[in-house]
Length: 192
Image (cartoon, rainbow, N blue to C red; front, top):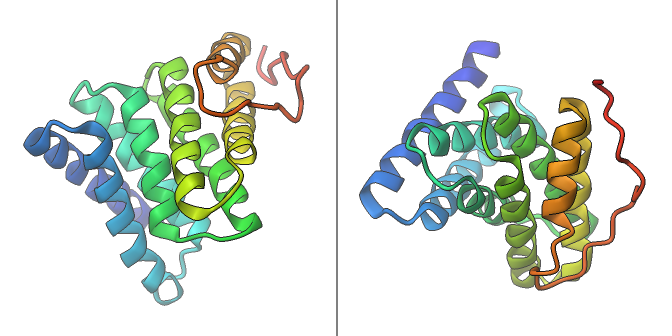
C-alpha cells in the first residue's frame, strides 16, 4: 500500500511538472491535473483499498512537490490544488468544508516538509476555497474559514513561526470573504 501511495505522489508530481512546463499557467495546470487524477482515483478507490481522504492527501502531496520542483509560485499552486480537489471530489454539503479543511492541512504540511512558502500557500488555499465555494454553491465565508482552520492546524504541527506566518496570510483583508478562525487564540505550536 505504501508503495502504491508513493507511486501516486510521484505520478501527480510528474504530471504537475509537465503541465506547468507546457502551459506556464500554474493554477490551471494544477487544477486540471488534480481534478482529473482525483476523479479517476475516486472511481477506483474501493478497488485499491484507498480512501478518498488518502487519495486527496497523495494527490495534494504530489502537486505541492511538483510545484516546488519547478520553482512555481506556491500560492498559485495551492489555489489550483484546492480548486482541483473540490472539482475532482465533487463534494457537496458539509463534506465540502471537511474536504477544504483536509486539503488545506495536507497542503501546509507538505509545503513545510519541502521548505515551501507557507504564507503564499495559505493565501492560495483561501483563494481556492473561495473560488471552489462559488462553483459549488457553498458560503464563501465558511469555505475560507475552513481553509484557514486546516492551514493553521497543520502549521501548529510545524512550529510557532509557521503558525504566525499562516495566521498573517489567512487573515489578510485582500480576500473576497471574511475569514473567521474557529480557534482565534491558536497561536501556540504543538512543537516548540
